[in-house]
Structures are given as C-alpha cells and as structure tokens.
Length: 640
Image 1 (cartoon, one colour):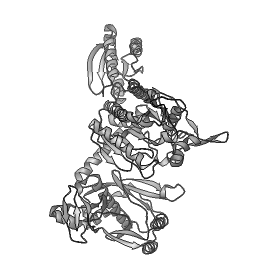
Image 2: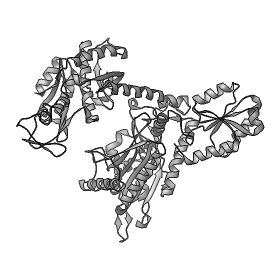
Image 3: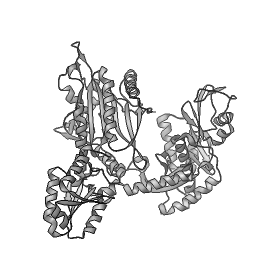
Image 4: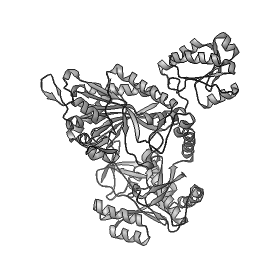
C-alpha cells in the first residue's frame, strides 16, 4: 500500500503496516525517535495499522506542543500507577495533559490525606515505572468487559465514564491502555514506553469536584509537568519562580492598586493608584480610536431576554449570564457589548454614505464564572473591554479589517511585546450557513495576505457567530497571552434585521466587525503588572513622581513642587512622614515609583529638585520646570 508524507513523497509499505513500520521505512534514526504518528491529521499510536493512501506525519520530540502533550499524558498515567502503588484503595478518575503540564484526580481512602509533602515519595515511585521502560499497550474491549473489570477493581469513576459513553455516544467498545501493572480507560494515543519521560516534576495539589459539580465528591487533584530534557524542565521551573515574584495579585496589594472582597466575588475594588492606571489605559484607547473615526457610545447594563434570544447568546451562553427580572420581564446583565451595539445601529436609519459606522465603548460587563475558576484580575466576573464594532458594506470589509489590524499592532506595540497571529475558523457549535463561513474566513485570510502577515491556523476555535483573527503576545518572561481580536460577523446583522439603504435605493444587510485591542482591561492590567514586574513606564505609572522633603522645614517647598507638577497633570505624591531621607528613598524604590524628587536646603534655595530614577539612582539636580517638561514629554510619547 501507499502512504503520503508531509512533503508529498509517496511511501511504499506492506499491507497491514503500522506507524512504527512507516517510521522504520523512512529511516532507522526516525524509528528510534518516533513517539506517535498522525494519520490524516489524527494522532495515533505507533502500533496502529495504516490504510492505503493515508497522509502520515511522524511525531518526535521535535514536534513541539503535540509531542509535549503526548509526553505529559504518558506522565499522568505513570503518576496514577505510582499513587495506586503507594495508597492501596485509592480511586482514580481522569488524568489529561493540559497547558504546561498534566494532572490526575484521585479519591483517597478515608483517613488518608495527601499533600505536597508526599511528592518526593510519589516521584520516587514514578521513577521506578520510568526506569522499567514499561510499554504502553492498547487493547480494545467490549463495554461489558470494561465495566466488569472496573467494577471488580472498585473504580466507580471509570464505571461512570463508560456508562456515559454508552449513553451519549452509543459505543460498543472502549480502549484500555496498560503500562506495567496499571491499566486505565483512555482514548490515547500514547508514546511507546515510559523511558521516553526524561524530566518531570509534581507541582501542586488542589481540590476538584468530580465532573466540576459542587454536589459531587471533592477529589484530590495532583498537578505536574514534564519535558524531554532536564534543561527544559529547569528553565520552566525558573520561569515559574520568576512568575511568582511577578504575581499581579501580590504586586497589586503591595503597590496599592486594587483589592478583592468576599462581598463581591470576582470583582476588583480599584484603589486610587489603580484607578489612575486604569484611566491611563482608557485614555490611551480613546486616543487610538478617535483619529480613526470611532464614535464612543454608552449602552445599558441590563437587557430584556429577547435581545439575547435574538443575538443567539440566550441559547449558547445563558449559563454564563447573570439573570434577573423586572416587572415579570426576564432580564440579564450584559456579558458583551455586541448585541447592544447591533440594537443601537438598528434603531436608526442609515444610508450607504453613512458607512462604515464605528462604535467604541469601554463598557462594563458581567459574566458568571464559577468561583473555583476566579483568579485575580485574570478571571473575573465584573470587567470592562476596549470594545468596538464596525458596521460596513461588503466592499468595505477588507479595508476595515486591515485598519483594525493596524490599530491593534500600534496599540500592543506600545508595550514592547512580541506578537503572533492566529486565524480561528468555524467551530462545530455555530450559527450561519457554510457559504457564510466560507466567505467570512476568506475575507480574514485575504486581509492577512494583503498585509503580508504570517499566521497559524486554529481550526474550530472561532466564535459561534464568525471566524476571528487573534493576537498572541509574549511577555518579558516568555509566557504567551491572547489579547487583541478581530472577528467578522455576517450572522448577527442578519439576526437583528439590520439594514442600510444602498446606492440602488434598496435595503442591504451590513457586515459587522467585532474588534478589541487589549481585550479586558482587568486581564490586560494583570498581565502588564507581571510583564513589567510592577515597574511601569512613566506614561502608565500610577504615581510618576514622589517628592521627598528631607526635613519638616522643606514641606512648604515640597507642596509648591507638587502644585507645579499637578498643574501639568503629572501624577505626583509627597512623603511627609518624619523619617530619614534614606528610608523614604527605600520605600519609594519598593513602590517602584519612576522618579524621586529630593528637596532640601540646597534645592529650596536654587528652585530645583534632586532627581533620582528608580533602579538608576542619583541623576543630579534639575529645575522643577525642566523636570515637568521631561515627564510630560515621556507621557505624551507613551514610550515603553
């Protein structure tokens, strides 16, 4: 039989050949390095038989994230095997690979408590399984055989998973994977054997409800990570340590930016300094929007459920919405601005001459996120977005998408990020016709081509109403974040019956573009805190300068300096405490304030300030007016 390699080369194989045979036919080195094989785009075990005409790709440790996911899935099975060895009677549930690692959920016997103090012992047992090079073998068995096995082994979570497969997918057989003495219910695929696991680390422990249901059993979730080399693991662990130092929740408290309270879970209370940071970003957004023809609007927080039914969110997003009622009318707080903007557009009559119409709104939004998923500013229930929507004609789509791309590049470029682009296409759960999706995906791809931008395809991850271009940025310690987005929507204008009068005096349906450069301000600020480790550029710093009088007799002059700075809208504070100047400087350094202005007898007499820069130290004396000009210039340029 024949198989086709990624470069188009045909590979001749014997009938019944497996992935391992294909790797060996290409070369002995590849056969040794092979971990799994992709057949027609689907990853499979090396032992899986191939079919004539199959498109093949051999996965090795050089295959990036796909190879790491495979390795981490292998390591999750080894973790489960070790835990069963050490804690007889433990019940196992699921153990998938996840971003940056893996986890496995366990129900330990009554009276048994596991903590991170047990990690060394568990890791030791895992190394025994790895050293033994236990082969991962797959067996497809009938549902009855699998149920009998897991009932006999008293593994009720596996039994429930199989029963759900029968009920929801009408399966007749399931696959089991065995390494050494351990057998698990698993779809696969897996690598050849445990010895491919070169470096791993158990990291943390947490509680997790079975199936995410608070009414079900609380399980113990053990998290870990794995890499193909000890060097990669060491680099990753070093990055995690650096991330801990930069944790926005800790820095947010220390720099007095925001706080959280149980009275409103998932909603930040912004302190004065944090509010200044917030307002600086909103002002930046407005300065980016206004020259590009965006009109800022302000729309309500609560809408009748009919609006959400029209938009399609009621059926697809209702469980994430905060619901309420008013005078027997079903209402909901808005989780996004787009339906309100569509309604606003539809409430007025438009000509083709009016288009494109561009609405922007730093609107407040509410989404119901489960309490267990809330995470500082990164995952909240109350937030705002630098949101905008463009309503345009079909002929204007490409120019408008390109303009959105330019705006996002310029916005994110102010923060010195590395930027990658992803085109996300139609998901399974979507609205609209295939023809509509073909047209929308083609338009976005063409705009990227015109701009000469490289991008990767992300199949199936578009919004339910349209495809999207997502911007991923890499921060200063190498982590990737998804921020800006441009989404092309033919569905919502149609659902809302939006029209404009064309040059032919007939009604036409506009195209809607959803656009955000930063995304959620909360998440963006959280990411910026960690990116800069709290050391913001001058234009963004909540406190740009602090005046430090040496003694009480210098307080009046300090107040004069503060007044001059505030007159030019410089964000300034004064430290009036009865403390030594050395202690005041140390405190200002800890607060990461860009400029410190020392005022004493000499400065008072000369009408100057002694200038210090955070981390740089003494910069000499400077006239107050010259310092003001310096800060104003840095603020206006908004340089990173």
